[in-house]
Length: 77
Image 1 (cartoon, rainbow, N blue to C red):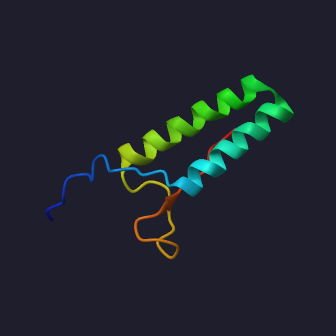
Image 2 (cartoon, rainbow, N blue to C red):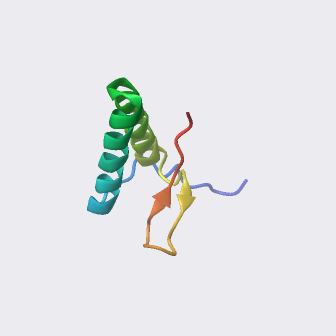
């Protein structure tokens, strides 16, 4: 039986300034257009997705062509 390395485990997750700005802009838009509760709910889903991305390690889609180590995920409704 071949040796398998342990799962990658938690990774360091860095939300860049441009990403944080995009998130903040999207939440402000949702608050204006759909209401504060919708924006807060979406903010919670963003936080959950970021935690999962860090915990699972290599989840999401690699965007290394943009930047080494960069990964992307979607947030379901």
